[in-house]
Amino acid sequence: MDPRQWKNNPRMKKTMSDQKIWEDRCRRCGQCCFEKWIEAAGRIRFTRIPCRHLDMVSRECRVYDKRLDVGEGCVQLTPENLPQLHWLPADCAYVELLDGAPVNGNTGKKKACRKTKRRGERGR
Figure 1: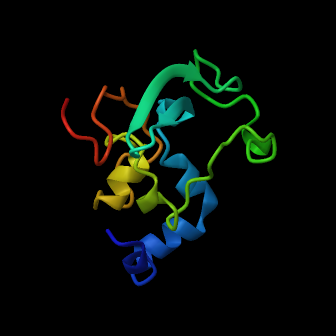
Figure 2: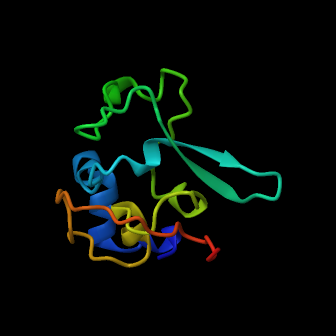
Figure 3: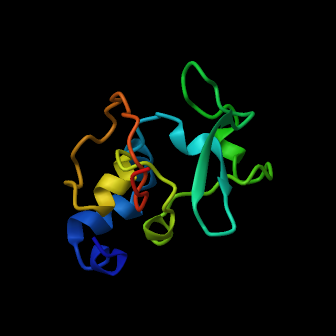
């Protein structure tokens, strides 16, 4: 779904304006908290190196409330920047929302995240 359409959808507008509902979409898989290398050609390489603030057991950030201030390269996910973040996994709840998942679907549910190709990633 195009972010411009979100602004015209009353249900989506409420979801995006309510920070708690937006945050609750996250399944806490932690995949977005691992280091990524971007090659000169633009290909994204995923590593097994987590952010130093990621709790590997709970998969939650230890400094979540100040994560954007610690200078670790953390990106706040928003409806506006989501379409440009091609490194997010296809089974990310935010990506699923962007791809047309129901606004209230899977909200707050923790599910096993699959080892999937990232959006835009081609087979090897």
